[in-house]
Length: 490
Image (cartoon, rainbow, N blue to C red; front, side, top):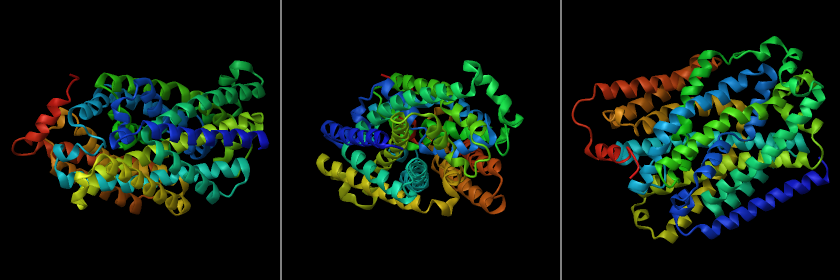
């Protein structure tokens, strides 16, 4: 990178600081900090939901998958998410917005005390917080790798720099700063992504038809739908997990819907995100698919996208591309930090410190910012030790993706009237069974990614549904009232 690239990157960092300050002026209470006061426009919510779906890990870990295995990356990742999001759009997203308008929730786990009971809520809240430590840690590690590839900066230094910037702007600006960063990073990524696509097609020499003829220059397996460990079972398992994750089992996705003015707005936001997941990755991933044509026998495929950018992009736009990767990563990690802070402040802290239930708005806002700061700090420590968990890909797929299912099943299905008979016992058994299955697969089948991904969520689903089917007695009255109240907008 040259001076102009660093200048562009510095400009983006300055923009982040301005976003934080702007968000600070809009925040008067914890409701503004966590849910934008329920005033998030559907189009901004939809773009934010989409951008929050991937970080610098896409340009590191997933770029390596594209380099080694080809088109299967789009099939099992982007297409699986888009299909899963259809269910999210019509079944789940509107119910989150209605929960806020009916019960004034600010965190995704806040409704669980009424739906199940307090112990179940606490188990799910604590489980989610711990799981998210690994996921966000992986994202910091990925941006450290990208910085190293572009600038030569040590990975640990890159992690520290990005973490400190993120702490500043999200602690100040809350959700408003986060969603505006999502919008800015998407615009930057769109410009850089289109330019990157055009440059790669130009170098291939076949014009627009290079999108199709390029595959002839790659191993035949690179153009197949399923390749290597990414089998049909793996893809179906990932799709099921994506339904629960993008519906709100990964909490910052729920926050985008909770912050919408109404159920219909949340549905439109989810629909826009679905469309973007279906189309945009085809543009974004193409240089990753083409990388083996230009970079033969690369010893470290995780650097393939960065090396392609260095090869094809002019200076200035190179800095812009790196800024967009920063934007994605910081947006996603900031979204996680904001939502985890809401869970800690609204659902965990009041149980252990009774006085927190009566905090005045100003004091609650101070607690919101403090917990956000501390959570990000903990994830940075995980990032420094990411190698102990199998690297970036290991953290994202082997740990986070496998663990999210057991905690997400009772959270998402608990919103649907069809599962009203599944109470607290079903929820706790479901979580326990899934986590035990995860531990068993880690011990017995550590190298089987498909089974490691499918087994925990499958066991959780079977237990949750079966326990509800055989449940004796009446449905909890509070749960009945809650489910009836979020059927439709009023």
